[in-house]
Image 1 (cartoon, rainbow, N blue to C red):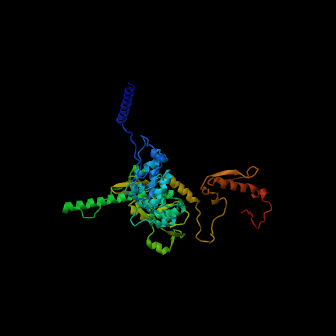
Image 2: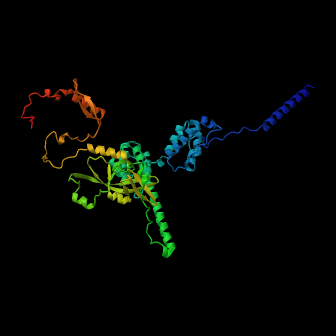
Image 3: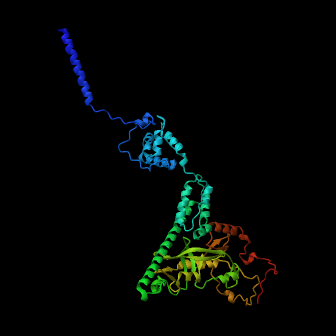
Length: 488
C-alpha cells in the first residue's frame, strides 16, 4: 500500500514537470539583436537603444573615395542637430558607410571602440590617402580670373580656395584676389580705393556684379532685337529694310513738365549724379563745350592747358563703366576719363565725347539731360542745391598766378572814389569774436572751420591781442620812412 502511494506521488511530479515544460514551449522567445559583425564596439555601445523619435541622420554615403574629414564633419553636424550623444554617434556612424568603407568597418578588432573619438581616429587613419590637401597662403596667388570668366564666378572660386587655407590672414587674401583679377573697371576701382579685407571686396563685388549682369542682359536683349529685325527682313523680301539697319531712335523732347518746379530764369550749371565703376558719384558737371581729342593730348605732352594758359599735369587715363539714368531706363557704357591733379569743386566733368557716346541731349533751360535706352528715353535732372554748393566751393579754390610779374595799375587812388564801392562778399558766413577786455577789441572769423581749428585760431588771436592797433593811440611814433599820410 505504501509503495503504491509513493508510485502515485512520483507520477504526479512527472506530470507537473511535463506541464511546466509545455508552458515554457508556448511562451515566445525574446528577440535578441545580433551584434555588429566582428563586434568592434564595447558592450555599452551595443546595448544603447535609438530613441523612437530620434531624427534621421541624412549624410551623403561614404564609399572610401571621398575626403574622410569632410564626411566626418558632415556626420557630426547632423548628430549635433539631432541631439545625439557619443554612444549614439558610434552606433549610427556605420550606417553612413558603403562598399569598401563598410567592409573595413567589419574588420575592426572586437571591443576596440570605447568612444566615438576611437572610431573617428581609426576612420581617418584608414582613409588618410583621400584627404584633400590644405592650401598655403602663397597658393592663392595662383588663382586667377580666366578669360571670359565673370567676376561672380571668379569670386566664388576664390572663396572656395580661401576655405582650404589654414592661415586666415586677410591682408594676403586681398592681395591675392587683386593679383588674380583680370584687368578691367573693377580692378581699376580696387586700385584707386584699396580694400582692407575680403568682406569689403565681397560687398563691392556685389554692386559690380549687378551692373555686370545688367549689361549682359541688355546685350542679350539687343542681340535678340537685331536677330528679330534680320529675320523680319528675310521673310518680307523686297519690301524689307536692308539687313543690319537699326530701328529708329525714340524722339527726345523737352516740355514744361521737365522743369520739375524750377524757375526758368535761373542760369544754373548742369550738375548731376551718376554711377561710375559701381559707385554713385555726385558733383558731376555736364559741360557741352568740353572735349579732348588725341591730337590735343600729343601736343600737350601730358599736360592740359586752360584758356588763360594755366598748365595742369595729366596723371593718366582710366576707363570706367559709367551709368546714367534710373531704373528701368538705365544706360551703362565704358567712358575713358583723363585724370588730373588740380583743385576743383567738381569730381567729374562730362564733356562732348562722353555725351555723344551716350547720345545725350542737354537742355540747360530745363536742367535736364535725356538719352535713348533701347526704345525708351532715360532722363537725368540736375541738382540745383549741389550746383550752388559747387559754386560756393569754387570761390574758395586759390587760383595760382601764371606769371611772376608785378601788376602796374593806372588808377586814381583817391579814397573817395572807387575804393568806396562795395567790395566782393566773402565766400562764407562770418561770426564776431572778442579778443581783448576793452570795448571794440573784436574781429570776425569764418564759420567753415572745424571746432578744433576754430579753437586754435581764437587762442592765437587772444594771446596776441596786444599787438593789434585798435586805435590811432596804439601807433605813436611810426617812422615816416615806413608809412605816412599826406593830404592832397
